[in-house]
Image (tube, rainbow, N blue to C red; front, top):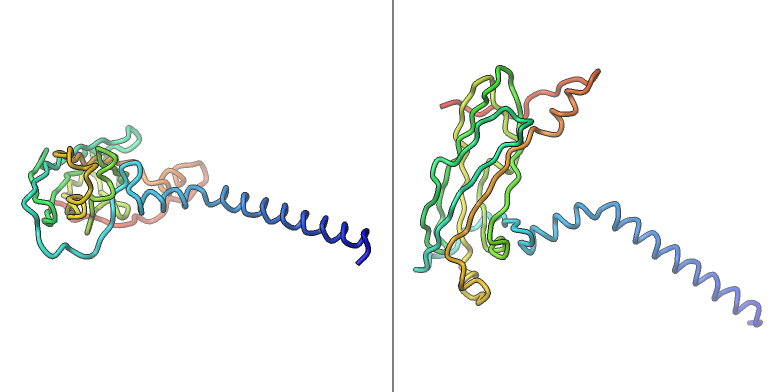
Length: 201
């Protein structure tokens, strides 16, 4: 191969490598929110809890206080609060807690709950089996509903020396008006059908 041919091949490889790097960067930028959310779910970073379908074989003797807090965004006309402020659980023990939501308005509204735990480092060991926060919730005019969350503290926390000082975990929820409902409120937009109705008490 001539010197000119070798230089041309080298330039083509350089251009292809640069184009590939740019494509990867653009892909990462486009999917960064999804990748970040996946990273949080896997690692518990930022207080993100885990989702589990399998219970531990048995509970340990170590006990942790679970506290519950609730907030509602001003855009959503709901009253939202935990039924209990705190409970004491054994590590590995499945427990059921309830929040109560009430639509204070005269129209049907849909909300979506965002959650986290504190301290943040405990997120990777807080597992939810079922939760109202997994999907949107719809309440009719002045409807009141109990919203349960089934959870356990993963026994793996016992082997993490960095969590030895954790005696209390706070589970926090904030309810926001559903995004698709906000879109429907724009002029000329069609309101979507409610995602799901809860049975009032």
